Length: 60
Figure 1 (cartoon, rainbow, N blue to C red):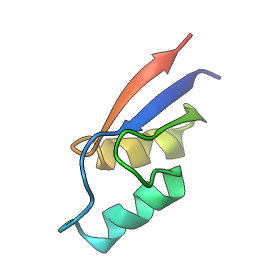
Figure 2: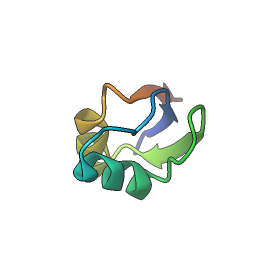
Figure 3: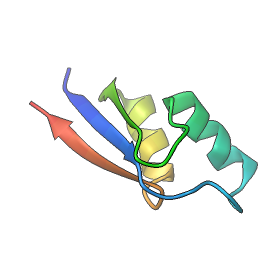
């Protein structure tokens, strides 16, 4: 399975609690923090919900 690198680029202030929980479950706390995840359907769905707060790139 492919891997993706997720970087938090915007703040979660004034965002719904649901989006804050998704960020927490991805392991993102600070702006600029980078985490790597397997590109599973559940992770891709979470990233899709937060596409305005994070940037995503594939790792080969």
